[in-house]
Length: 429
Image (cartoon, rainbow, N blue to C red; front, side, top):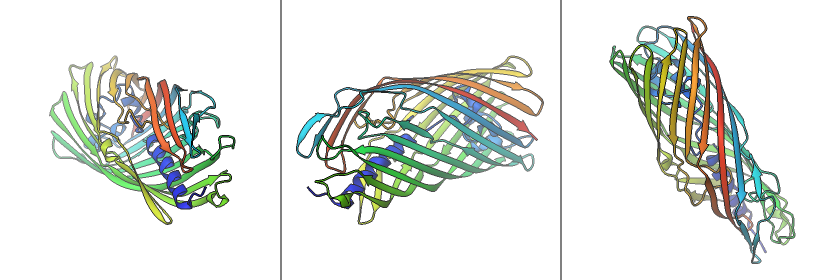
């Protein structure tokens, strides 16, 4: 049997880079970009003021009275289980057998820490400049080498840094505007096993490491019809992301020619979604403020993964859909220095029921949040929050043809939940 070096490169790159995109939210977007927002399930950020809401709306710093800084840290703890439900592999011989191996994976989704920070400089009573640093697409999943998922996923790690440079302007007492330029750096490492021709042979392996910068923009506005009501809207552009890296294949045995174990350079192009936010904050009285928001995420932009490599190119069509997220929350001014808050959010998955991968088995989720702010001094505010996220039970249902021409049919059940603990500080100067 012979396999071309080009077809192996294409198969490896397509499988690995599909995982990279899925390993970065719902689907692979992390919302933990504001500790204050975490406490009310992100229901009011697009309509709130100050540097703590800069990720959500570049207009949030327009008209600030003093320059401001923000730092937040979010600990994400995930409890998950992935169970085999009759997955099979058909090798080129041909013969169809159970994949075998460990049939249950406990906590394959790693816990993580998500930091974020921002600073806003007051130029005058109308003009402000700001910088936001966030990590919106960080994720790691790991399965052991003998897991039933091994031909689809072993390790999936994605690290990103998003930097926004923002200009905000207060047009008048009613209208604030903001615009920003986005730079996103992504670094990925993805591995999985590769079946040899005979089930008696040990598995080979394939891996991808890659990184790259990409650019976009963000715009936003806030309208203040009265002192008690603020309406906010923002738009974060899609980003055409390129990953330059190395694809490696090892451990393939005869009758596959030894030359098909190789290392080759390659590039993948994917499109990360646009995000449109709309929301409002209404101060009912001096103590109670109601928050509400709707977010539309343009996952339909993630239509395909386009890979180029020496000697050719490949395209893997995806089937994501645009989704709408809803959130409501409340702030309560318990005392001059203490603010309490709570919220709830519904966040659907854009991933298809057929084609979902073991890399990041996503499902619809409900978020329940609580938080508080303590004004330690007139210039320092300390934020804390906790979220509980309940994931709907979901399934892994995916069929792939590997680079060695084996057909892998994954069928599994997934359960999970998560807790997010957040702490941060805001200060003026």
